[in-house]
Image 1 (cartoon, rainbow, N blue to C red):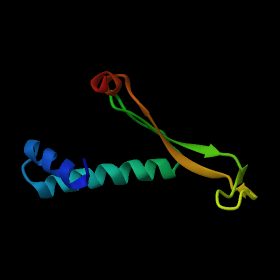
Image 2: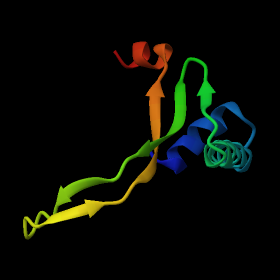
Image 3: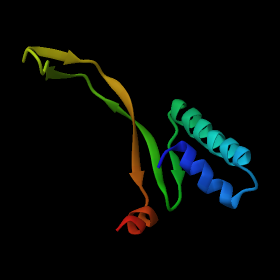
Image 4: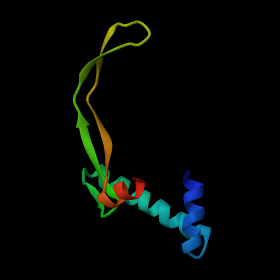
Length: 89
């Protein structure tokens, strides 16, 4: 399911597609801003988004096999909630 399909599904509950798009974009923006501030975002029953730090490490160039250094980075991690896990099972 892509963004347009999600908007179409949300529009069935809301009044218009335009309203559904605004709600979805607002949700994504709010989650992004919170993660940028290093805050966890928990949607009870759905899951938790959090920023995790990955340390620098050694790797290999897959084409040459030569060792390379991979820089430290930050990644977004999603941990599904109990209700979401049960819905998928």
